[in-house]
Length: 54
Image 1 (cartoon, rainbow, N blue to C red):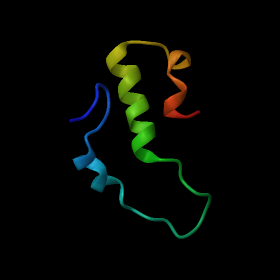
Image 2 (cartoon, rainbow, N blue to C red):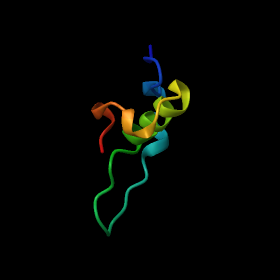
Image 3 (tube, helix red, strand yellow):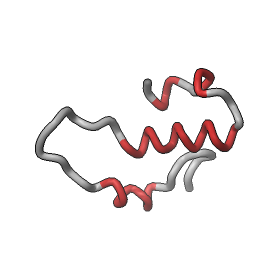
């Protein structure tokens, strides 16, 4: 069961695209969970918990 403001594990397959060049990408799923947290909670971006990354 997914926690509040998090994508369920079944949605992990939408982030399977790989890149061959450029800098390594941040974790897309973690970033999207952070965006969902801000939108659903109504908090400011600066109040986002550190668990969602910089």
